Length: 535
Image (cartoon, rainbow, N blue to C red):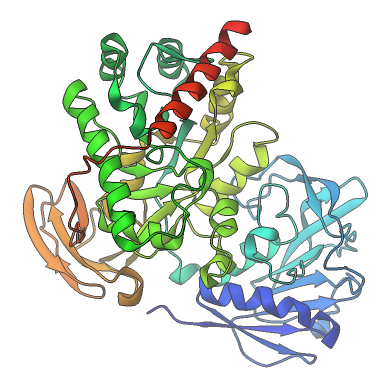
């Protein structure tokens, strides 16, 4: 287990409402906070919450890393956030991918302008002056932030203050904490991305404003991948030429699963366990029928209709052979509000809920810049979703989004199966590679200097064993905390698969849907196609 880093928080009693946020970070990072109004000796770092942001006198300078932040006692918990614009400098201490960028976000209160001494370097500033800075005192970095740490709303979650619209107040804290824990922090996979469109099927070469041939050509030209969340109920017919188009462009176009009948709250209702099994069995049976008829593989990733999915259904997805689900943080919380795990949503690369990996996704319209940058900062896959009508004004939307994402660096665009299998974290401990799987199957390339591999995590989290394949050699089995030797000539990939792969006894899924569900879907599809003809 990684060490726990002691963080001293020097604050008056008025700043205690921040304690709720501190407890959330204690569950996400190897840190432990202690609160006091007086300086404390020792610890890995100190957070100083003060009324004024003035240069720190030499007599008060600490030999441990510190972060000084503003305190604003007048910050109402139910106040409406206000817009603010900040420009990040090109300094190395500005975290990727924010260097040199100007962003507009929301904050609870305007940041205070910092009064800097000559040793401080500006990291971010607004039109009034510097709001984030760093200095090196006695070889130790000392950060100052003009942002007051956000107060958690009653019954709130981390995503209330860490989302595409609002994250500036917490960014200096996150960046500082990561620096404190750097020796125990895990690296993630490369940048990865995928676009998703909900609803399209393979009945014809177009679905509403979605033109599969045009998207395939543009995706190849501009370097991106588009996956279509298709409804199992729609697999009764497939247009041969459309299936061939997908086969010929498998590196740019793919399919995943969108519910079963596409009914409201279809995966969030209160079912019996046999009913959940039956619903998923029917969805899989229909998808297998599509695969058999077309030769097209369909990613075993569930995109619930309208993002509605219960914790119980997520558990059944894992038992039924699905590799993952893809749901927005907001939808996850909205349909599982009484679950404790909703408090920490938004920070991790993905969630692991009842044995089911859940990857985040966001809308592809509106101001997506902050969403993309925050996802890259947190190591989350950049998954943007839309509906056919989002392309009403042309495919330029996808081209522009892909251009921005590709501008971040080397990005792996892929179907959702491959993207899920890149879902892991790792770090080197001398010549030992420690891997924390975040999916039920992961594939990664071990650094050449590795001699042993250890699986990180907790038994209570994974509740599973792992089957390991190294290069062309199979199979070793181990559990969390156990290690295996790696061959001296290792040059291939290592695959890890959770075992058992499937524990639910699946039915044949041959039961039919209600006639009204089929009629409803036909009418919806007809509407979508008619909209495009009217344009």
